[in-house]
Length: 159
View 1 (tube, helix red, strand yellow):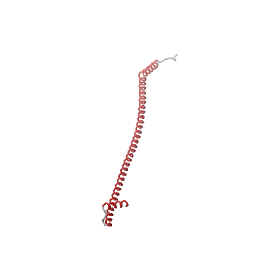
View 2 (tube, rainbow, N blue to C red):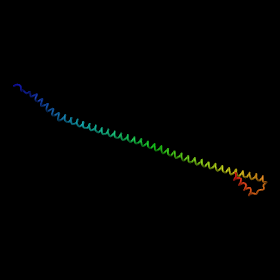
View 3 (spheres, rainbow, N blue to C red):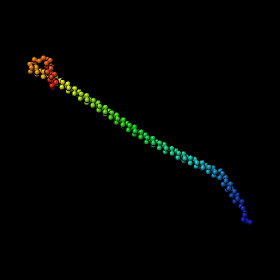
View 4 (tube, rainbow, N blue to C red):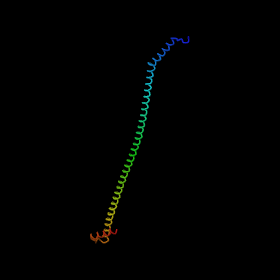
């Protein structure tokens, strides 16, 4: 029976390999695997944090864009209000100036009318004086002051 002859060197080598494998597994592979798992979890955590920060950044960007859009709308509204206010102020100033011009024109018309009336009265007085003088010459200065005044008033009434 030579078939079953065991070489003890091979058995010790196999036992050594098994012991070496178990020792490597216990002291090298398991800690390295644990470290790699921890690194993997840390990297995944960092990636998740980066995604959260990226989402926050997108949210902040959206908020800033909304605020910018709102600021543009508010500035447009302010500009439009200022335009309307300026237009209203312009219209008020124009209407005040127009009213002042109308008043000045009315005052000028009144002054012209008063001057005209005064001129007419002065001319009437002068004409009456000339008429009285002419009547005196025609009548030969025989009239009294009261009769002259009466003739003057009649002449003005007819004129």
